[in-house]
Image (tube, rainbow, N blue to C red; front, side):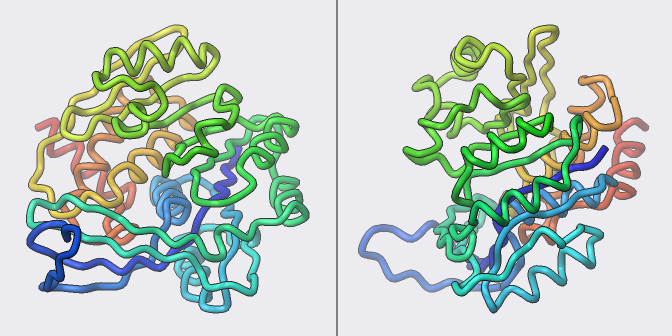
Length: 298
């Protein structure tokens, strides 16, 4: 069993700011760093560091060698990445003094997926394998369709929310992973209870994972409803918290953990991630998570 993660690959330009820049304001940043990211790359790194065999599908531009090399260094199979004539995707990320962030995204090569390449990548998947998707590449519905035809288990994180993803057949997913902002956009509800109720009604055959930041996470399917509190740490940068949770969540599914323990492991991994700077750079190795869990159990 393996994972094909078909998703974005970005250069992240991260600026430390006293507060998020306001309309018409020129704001001096007091720090700037360049990281490798994109929700796709982050989740592939999280999966690999959680000990899962993962093949990454996607596109980069001529400036994408560093992105490919970084994935390889972290044990990700990069045979599904194609170079196209376009700049690689990139983000401009502001991180304030409380560790909160806001992100400006340019899709670039991530929006240049083509049908032939998609087929080539997904032909490497088999029935029972996991196909992971986010909403930072084009042809999402086609990728979903081909994955389902191959009998793959479909995990969708519909981020960022836009009009196209709101119209996509998300009920095809085996697992739908959303945070509060995405949950509100999909349901119109502002409270987690109503979000979950609406999502479960709208997508009855789909398991829902609702991540709630400092309030933890909530998983529900036809058979069980499990809540997990967040593990308190000093937050430095929350950029990759959700992607870390996603990677360790899928790893836990593949390893057959009971949902209570699975979510506890995810919470620990995310706590480590938010205590560090950067996106993919902050994602912990499995051994670090195991050590942290042992310290929590003392």
